[in-house]
Length: 244
Ligand SMILES: [Zn+2]
Image (cartoon, rainbow, N blue to C red):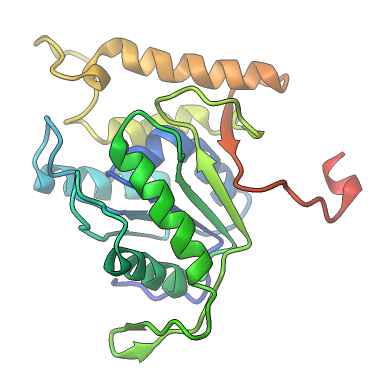
Protein backbone atom coordinates (compact mmCIF):
# COMPACT_ATOMS: atom_id res chain seq x y z
CA UNK A 1 0.00 0.00 0.00
CA UNK A 2 1.62 3.21 -1.17
CA UNK A 3 -0.06 5.84 0.96
CA UNK A 4 -0.23 5.62 4.70
CA UNK A 5 -3.00 7.95 5.81
CA UNK A 6 -3.51 8.35 9.53
CA UNK A 7 -7.24 7.95 9.30
CA UNK A 8 -9.65 7.35 6.45
CA UNK A 9 -13.28 8.16 7.21
CA UNK A 10 -14.91 5.65 4.86
CA UNK A 11 -13.42 2.45 3.43
CA UNK A 12 -15.38 0.70 0.69
CA UNK A 13 -14.67 -2.95 -0.13
CA UNK A 14 -15.72 -4.65 -3.35
CA UNK A 15 -15.35 -8.26 -4.47
CA UNK A 16 -14.41 -7.03 -7.96
CA UNK A 17 -13.11 -3.74 -9.37
CA UNK A 18 -16.31 -1.76 -10.24
CA UNK A 19 -18.60 -3.17 -7.50
CA UNK A 20 -18.06 -0.07 -5.38
CA UNK A 21 -18.68 2.36 -8.24
CA UNK A 22 -21.82 0.51 -9.32
CA UNK A 23 -23.46 0.33 -5.93
CA UNK A 24 -22.26 3.11 -3.62
CA UNK A 25 -20.21 5.50 -5.81
CA UNK A 26 -22.56 8.45 -5.46
CA UNK A 27 -22.58 8.10 -1.66
CA UNK A 28 -18.77 8.07 -1.64
CA UNK A 29 -18.77 11.27 -3.71
CA UNK A 30 -21.22 12.80 -1.21
CA UNK A 31 -18.87 11.88 1.66
CA UNK A 32 -15.95 13.49 -0.19
CA UNK A 33 -18.08 16.60 -0.88
CA UNK A 34 -18.76 16.77 2.87
CA UNK A 35 -15.00 17.01 3.45
CA UNK A 36 -14.19 13.45 4.53
CA UNK A 37 -11.68 11.00 3.04
CA UNK A 38 -12.54 7.80 1.19
CA UNK A 39 -10.46 4.72 0.30
CA UNK A 40 -11.45 1.70 -1.78
CA UNK A 41 -10.20 -1.87 -1.54
CA UNK A 42 -10.92 -4.36 -4.33
CA UNK A 43 -10.64 -7.89 -2.92
CA UNK A 44 -9.79 -9.43 -6.31
CA UNK A 45 -8.47 -8.33 -9.68
CA UNK A 46 -11.58 -9.55 -11.49
CA UNK A 47 -9.47 -12.00 -13.48
CA UNK A 48 -12.36 -14.44 -14.05
CA UNK A 49 -14.53 -11.83 -15.76
CA UNK A 50 -15.74 -12.54 -19.30
CA UNK A 51 -14.52 -9.13 -20.44
CA UNK A 52 -11.27 -7.27 -19.79
CA UNK A 53 -7.90 -8.57 -18.61
CA UNK A 54 -6.63 -7.96 -15.05
CA UNK A 55 -4.29 -5.33 -16.53
CA UNK A 56 -7.15 -3.56 -18.29
CA UNK A 57 -9.25 -3.64 -15.15
CA UNK A 58 -6.39 -2.29 -13.04
CA UNK A 59 -5.98 0.65 -15.44
CA UNK A 60 -9.74 1.22 -15.36
CA UNK A 61 -9.77 1.13 -11.55
CA UNK A 62 -6.98 3.74 -11.50
CA UNK A 63 -8.95 5.93 -13.90
CA UNK A 64 -12.07 5.58 -11.73
CA UNK A 65 -10.00 6.49 -8.64
CA UNK A 66 -8.82 9.71 -10.31
CA UNK A 67 -12.32 10.62 -11.48
CA UNK A 68 -13.95 9.87 -8.13
CA UNK A 69 -11.28 11.52 -5.96
CA UNK A 70 -10.59 8.66 -3.56
CA UNK A 71 -7.56 9.18 -1.35
CA UNK A 72 -6.34 5.67 -2.06
CA UNK A 73 -7.32 2.44 -3.81
CA UNK A 74 -5.76 -0.94 -3.21
CA UNK A 75 -6.29 -4.46 -4.56
CA UNK A 76 -5.81 -7.57 -2.44
CA UNK A 77 -5.75 -10.21 -5.19
CA UNK A 78 -7.55 -12.84 -3.05
CA UNK A 79 -8.67 -14.71 -6.17
CA UNK A 80 -11.69 -14.03 -8.36
CA UNK A 81 -14.22 -16.88 -7.93
CA UNK A 82 -12.24 -18.11 -4.92
CA UNK A 83 -12.66 -15.67 -2.01
CA UNK A 84 -13.03 -18.51 0.44
CA UNK A 85 -13.73 -17.94 4.09
CA UNK A 86 -10.22 -18.68 5.31
CA UNK A 87 -8.14 -17.35 8.19
CA UNK A 88 -5.61 -16.02 5.66
CA UNK A 89 -8.19 -14.07 3.66
CA UNK A 90 -9.72 -12.57 6.81
CA UNK A 91 -6.24 -11.58 8.02
CA UNK A 92 -5.51 -9.77 4.73
CA UNK A 93 -8.71 -7.73 5.09
CA UNK A 94 -7.99 -6.99 8.76
CA UNK A 95 -4.62 -5.56 7.73
CA UNK A 96 -6.35 -3.13 5.36
CA UNK A 97 -8.88 -2.10 8.04
CA UNK A 98 -6.14 -1.53 10.61
CA UNK A 99 -4.11 0.41 8.04
CA UNK A 100 -6.90 2.85 7.15
CA UNK A 101 -8.71 2.88 10.56
CA UNK A 102 -12.08 3.79 9.01
CA UNK A 103 -15.15 4.92 10.95
CA UNK A 104 -17.44 3.56 8.26
CA UNK A 105 -17.03 0.45 6.10
CA UNK A 106 -19.04 -0.34 2.97
CA UNK A 107 -19.31 -3.94 1.75
CA UNK A 108 -21.19 -6.16 -0.68
CA UNK A 109 -24.57 -7.39 0.58
CA UNK A 110 -24.92 -10.86 2.16
CA UNK A 111 -27.77 -11.62 -0.25
CA UNK A 112 -26.58 -11.20 -3.85
CA UNK A 113 -26.65 -12.87 -7.27
CA UNK A 114 -22.88 -13.32 -7.67
CA UNK A 115 -21.42 -15.85 -5.18
CA UNK A 116 -18.25 -13.74 -4.84
CA UNK A 117 -20.37 -10.85 -3.54
CA UNK A 118 -21.89 -13.08 -0.86
CA UNK A 119 -18.45 -14.41 0.12
CA UNK A 120 -16.96 -10.91 0.17
CA UNK A 121 -19.76 -9.72 2.42
CA UNK A 122 -19.08 -12.43 5.00
CA UNK A 123 -15.31 -11.93 4.86
CA UNK A 124 -15.53 -8.16 5.37
CA UNK A 125 -18.17 -8.49 8.11
CA UNK A 126 -16.02 -10.91 10.08
CA UNK A 127 -12.84 -8.93 9.45
CA UNK A 128 -14.50 -5.76 10.81
CA UNK A 129 -15.20 -7.60 14.07
CA UNK A 130 -11.92 -9.49 14.43
CA UNK A 131 -9.96 -6.34 13.56
CA UNK A 132 -10.91 -4.99 16.99
CA UNK A 133 -9.41 -7.89 18.90
CA UNK A 134 -6.31 -7.00 20.90
CA UNK A 135 -4.97 -10.56 20.87
CA UNK A 136 -5.15 -10.95 17.10
CA UNK A 137 -1.74 -9.79 15.88
CA UNK A 138 -1.06 -8.46 12.39
CA UNK A 139 1.87 -6.65 10.84
CA UNK A 140 2.23 -4.49 7.76
CA UNK A 141 5.62 -3.59 6.28
CA UNK A 142 7.23 -5.02 9.41
CA UNK A 143 5.18 -2.80 11.73
CA UNK A 144 2.84 -4.26 14.36
CA UNK A 145 -0.68 -2.93 13.76
CA UNK A 146 -3.03 -1.65 16.45
CA UNK A 147 -6.54 -3.13 16.76
CA UNK A 148 -9.31 -1.10 15.19
CA UNK A 149 -13.02 -1.85 14.87
CA UNK A 150 -15.03 0.38 12.48
CA UNK A 151 -18.06 2.04 14.08
CA UNK A 152 -20.44 1.32 11.20
CA UNK A 153 -20.85 -1.30 8.48
CA UNK A 154 -23.19 -0.69 5.56
CA UNK A 155 -24.09 -3.24 2.88
CA UNK A 156 -24.66 -1.67 -0.54
CA UNK A 157 -27.38 -2.95 -2.85
CA UNK A 158 -26.00 -4.02 -6.22
CA UNK A 159 -27.72 -6.51 -8.52
CA UNK A 160 -30.39 -8.20 -6.45
CA UNK A 161 -33.18 -5.98 -5.19
CA UNK A 162 -33.19 -5.78 -1.41
CA UNK A 163 -35.45 -3.65 0.74
CA UNK A 164 -33.11 -0.94 2.06
CA UNK A 165 -32.79 -0.13 5.77
CA UNK A 166 -31.69 3.37 4.88
CA UNK A 167 -31.49 5.46 1.72
CA UNK A 168 -28.92 8.20 1.07
CA UNK A 169 -29.98 11.22 -1.00
CA UNK A 170 -27.50 11.26 -3.90
CA UNK A 171 -29.27 13.81 -6.09
CA UNK A 172 -26.20 16.08 -6.11
CA UNK A 173 -23.63 13.39 -6.94
CA UNK A 174 -25.41 10.82 -9.08
CA UNK A 175 -24.38 12.33 -12.45
CA UNK A 176 -20.72 12.61 -11.40
CA UNK A 177 -20.74 9.03 -10.12
CA UNK A 178 -21.60 7.78 -13.62
CA UNK A 179 -18.09 8.76 -14.73
CA UNK A 180 -16.68 6.35 -12.18
CA UNK A 181 -18.83 3.55 -13.59
CA UNK A 182 -17.98 4.36 -17.20
CA UNK A 183 -14.26 4.35 -16.37
CA UNK A 184 -14.64 0.55 -16.51
CA UNK A 185 -14.94 0.65 -20.28
CA UNK A 186 -14.30 -3.07 -20.75
CA UNK A 187 -17.35 -3.98 -18.66
CA UNK A 188 -20.11 -1.58 -19.67
CA UNK A 189 -21.74 -0.13 -22.74
CA UNK A 190 -19.72 2.66 -24.35
CA UNK A 191 -21.25 5.21 -26.69
CA UNK A 192 -20.67 4.17 -30.31
CA UNK A 193 -20.07 0.50 -29.60
CA UNK A 194 -21.79 -1.57 -32.28
CA UNK A 195 -21.02 -5.20 -31.43
CA UNK A 196 -23.51 -7.22 -29.45
CA UNK A 197 -23.21 -7.24 -25.66
CA UNK A 198 -21.35 -10.30 -24.33
CA UNK A 199 -22.62 -10.04 -20.77
CA UNK A 200 -25.71 -8.91 -18.93
CA UNK A 201 -23.99 -5.81 -17.63
CA UNK A 202 -22.52 -4.81 -21.02
CA UNK A 203 -25.98 -4.12 -22.41
CA UNK A 204 -26.87 -0.49 -22.89
CA UNK A 205 -30.04 -1.11 -20.90
CA UNK A 206 -28.01 -2.06 -17.83
CA UNK A 207 -26.97 1.58 -17.38
CA UNK A 208 -30.58 2.66 -17.77
CA UNK A 209 -31.50 0.07 -15.14
CA UNK A 210 -28.94 1.53 -12.74
CA UNK A 211 -30.47 4.95 -13.14
CA UNK A 212 -33.97 3.52 -12.69
CA UNK A 213 -32.96 1.97 -9.38
CA UNK A 214 -31.42 5.24 -8.17
CA UNK A 215 -34.61 7.06 -9.22
CA UNK A 216 -36.75 4.48 -7.42
CA UNK A 217 -34.76 4.77 -4.19
CA UNK A 218 -34.84 8.56 -4.54
CA UNK A 219 -38.61 8.45 -4.91
CA UNK A 220 -38.89 6.49 -1.67
CA UNK A 221 -37.40 9.42 0.26
CA UNK A 222 -38.79 12.25 -1.85
CA UNK A 223 -35.59 13.13 -3.71
CA UNK A 224 -34.40 12.75 -7.30
CA UNK A 225 -31.85 9.96 -6.73
CA UNK A 226 -31.00 7.63 -3.86
CA UNK A 227 -28.66 4.78 -2.93
CA UNK A 228 -30.04 2.14 -0.59
CA UNK A 229 -28.23 0.18 2.13
CA UNK A 230 -28.83 -2.80 4.37
CA UNK A 231 -27.56 -2.65 7.94
CA UNK A 232 -26.22 -5.61 9.95
CA UNK A 233 -27.80 -4.25 13.15
CA UNK A 234 -30.29 -1.53 14.18
CA UNK A 235 -28.91 1.96 13.73
CA UNK A 236 -28.33 3.69 17.06
CA UNK A 237 -29.57 7.27 17.15
CA UNK A 238 -27.23 9.24 19.41
CA UNK A 239 -28.65 12.66 18.67
CA UNK A 240 -32.36 12.55 17.97
CA UNK A 241 -32.60 16.06 16.54
CA UNK A 242 -29.69 15.59 14.13
CA UNK A 243 -31.69 12.88 12.33
CA UNK A 244 -35.38 13.78 12.84
ZN1 LIG B 1 -18.78 -7.92 -8.65
